[in-house]
Image (cartoon, rainbow, N blue to C red; front, side):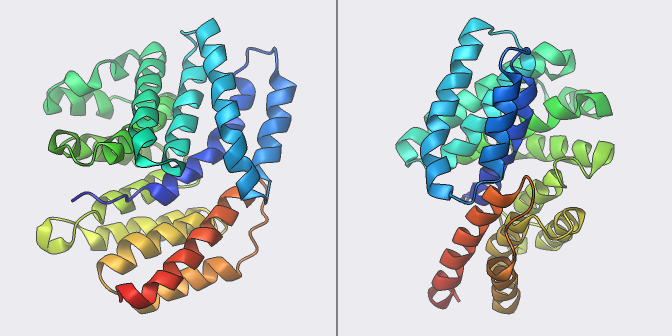
Amino acid sequence: MFRKVFRGFLLVQLLWLSSCASLMNGITTQLADNLSAAILNSDDVATVREAVPAYLLLIDSFIINDPNQPQLLMAAATLNGAYSVLVDESRTMILADKAMDYASRGACLEVAQLCGLNSLSFAVFEQRIQAMTAEDLTYLYGYAVAWTGWIQANSGDWNAIGQLARVKLMMARVLELDETWDRGGAHLYLGGLETVLPASMGGRPDLGKIHFEKAIELADGKFLMAKVVYAEQYAKLIFDRTLHDRLLNEVIQADPNFDGMTLTNRIAQERAAVLLADGEEYF
């Protein structure tokens, strides 16, 4: 069954809080700038976890006031998707559905070719995705991230699992247009997608490994969550404890303080400690 491949990386989408700074139509730009910087550079994970729901409500209020603002809708999609992995399962689906709704609406408003994607035949879907340009990256990538989270939340539905090929195609197009986008985020997602299943069941862990290592390279090793997902998804899948423990120890020993990534790195270190502790039982 489809595992929670993207738990770690969806937390990473808290980084996209910084994009919210430009979404308030000039009214609260400075406030959003300051709030985003404070969150991204905070080393107090518990406080941020408690604060995010208030931020979600704030953005929801802006959407009520202006429901056809594509950038605002994409920011709301990102935040709801990120927060969905921090709550219990009864709320995960609600938040993932909300993120998917916001992302599909925002993307459609800005890029007509991204309208109605889930109702298209795969051949037409592929034609539209291949027609995307670098100018469409924000919406293409944001939509793909929300869709991935929605599939995760609906992992018990094989109809949802059947949409993985569409998400993979979207992420692959992001790489073709700019593999450095979101610090190599598409590489990290594709690494996860390729390691959902072992090779004997159709997975492609060797290709996943290539994507993980590229994601780490593009972030110059400072994006610690990439190593955590690499360890959890690839190393555990192939039962490589040496790689698993090396990656996680590197994360724990690293300096998490880096502009715009401190919060996510702290979360990565928390997750790495849990995975190391569980290693004895797993391996």
